[in-house]
Length: 166
Image 1 (tube, rainbow, N blue to C red):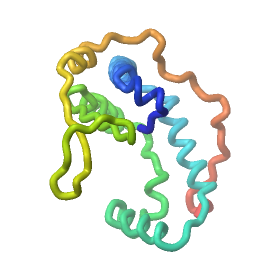
Image 2 (image 1 turned 90 degrees about the vertical axis):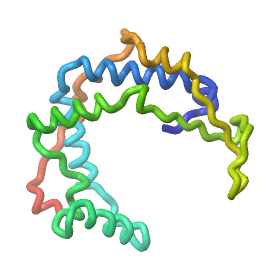
Image 3 (image 1 turned 180 degrees about the horizontal axis):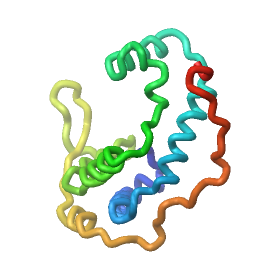
């Protein structure tokens, strides 16, 4: 994520809030309406995508063929599967993997203090582990200010059959 200068100064607080939100999501039932909103937004993006040219287009298509095959390369990135038990299980697995134990936070900025130098490229950097901070985010309490967004009443689209969208 990108941070403002104030965010860089308060990055630990931001990490705290992120892990608190992940904890809240893992303790909350799967939000069907939110999944459907994301699915609708993806369809809107597909219906209103701009044609791209040149190197960016060929790079995206080449990578897409490896991921989706030749038949799905143009549409697959925009398609959401219908919600199923596998969808919910995948959602839960992702949330379960987003833990402080799996965190590697990298703060990149011109004003970050560096006390080491990489031997080949002479890039300056520093590395530290903050055990006290780790314990704080590991035992993160729920923040009452956090909640799943209410349904968005403005996301109502006219769905076209997929074959007419291409």
